[in-house]
View 1 (tube, helix red, strand yellow):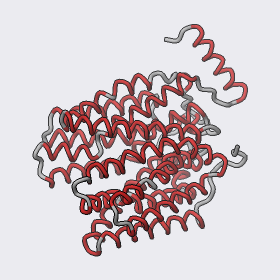
View 2: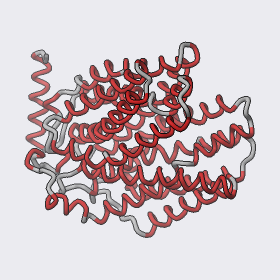
View 3: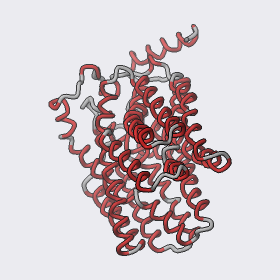
View 4: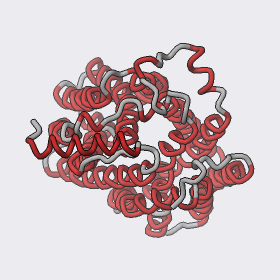
Length: 424
């Protein structure tokens, strides 16, 4: 409950909103969002490679593990656009985020407590759907709090806290799995829901403007009718950016798994620690780079940074094809941090740019999420075929060529989306 001083601050903030139209979120709300992004990343980390490890220790056949993971991926892909639509029409974005994180935590607990096929499948489905709601909810809360003029810096801050959370969680859960059991990983993930909810409810409800992500329109009057969605899907910059997201994930998604396989073949004894290093260290590099990316996106625009991300991805693919030494392969993987930092900020930021005035910021995020999912799925399928048929070098060169095509696509076709007069 707000005390008198806090209430006065809230009224003062509202007064500034009325006078100049610029949001002025309190420090408590900003810190609350920081904490929620951090702990949400902790909860989500348990659903990465740890799922396959845990199910393997439970004597599951690989075909069942693969089926569970594939179904989860397909449901996640199918729920991207509906997840954004849910946030567009939800009465409370904060409540939707709370329900999503609770559902994800419950999924983690269920997997640990009842590792039978039906329960694990149901948990993966719930996790996939809830994650498709959580991501646009975080972006919508961010935009609601700070407004469009400050959203690039806020998204950079989000990406930084998410990367720190993922890195620390991966290290902590790995330690739990080693010293306790692989089941403990999911109990830890479920436990992280409590601090996530505490952080979420530190965000003051009156500072979350439900109309701001929709260009000032009341979202409860938006609906999701076909006629209302036509301007969104007719939006050429949105379609082009979806193409960019598809190409990036097509080139990027299979690169680390293929590199991990090469590490295992070339250095089987130290492969585990090398793969862990190649995952955890880039997370902290992303955390360091993301705030600067947010600032540069406001100063330089979105397009130069998108060009940089594709350029670095193309170089990374070429280096993976040429490098043999396992330690150098890990060093090459560190380049992923640059692209990850850029995309982590630019995806929601560019969506905010191109969906301005449509009233469907969150649904537009779902469209991009769908493009990302398709690109990732096709990437692993293509690379698996190329690696088995022609070798890893050919597979890496192919990914590098796709990234180079994406570079050219952004350079020649993708327009700058930063609003005019919005640089610092």
